[in-house]
Length: 142
Ligand code: FES
Ligand code: FES
Image 1 (cartoon, rainbow, N blue to C red):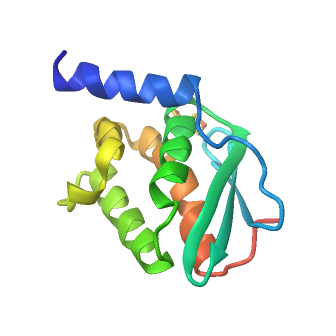
Image 2 (image 1 turned 180 degrees about the vertical axis):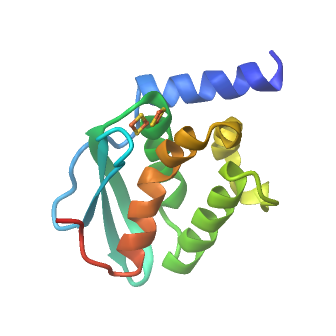
């Protein structure tokens, strides 16, 4: 299996069997729309003493956006908020085709291929935009 096949396999796995796709009670919730396509994702976070205790998501979207949200919920659990932001920035750089520290990205590297498709970059970043907005404590979109 070459790297591209492996990446495709990871994306397919997370889009067909998304992890943590449910609402979370008593959580910080941020709902964001991708204006290009009308898809939306709601990200739920519970934070205990500055650490992400739990993360989940709901929403509709293409396989890229669902896979990205699914991987996000796995990647940020247990991280201090500051490290979740560092991870988010590294992922953003990766999918935008900039130099990124991939050492902490793990499975998320599977989404690196979207850098060639500007519309797909928005799909991959939807849940991450919600994460960053939630961490900054900005209000939800109406
Ligand atoms: Fe996501 Fe076109 S807007 S694939
Ligand atoms: Fe809508 Fe990808 S096409 S989020």
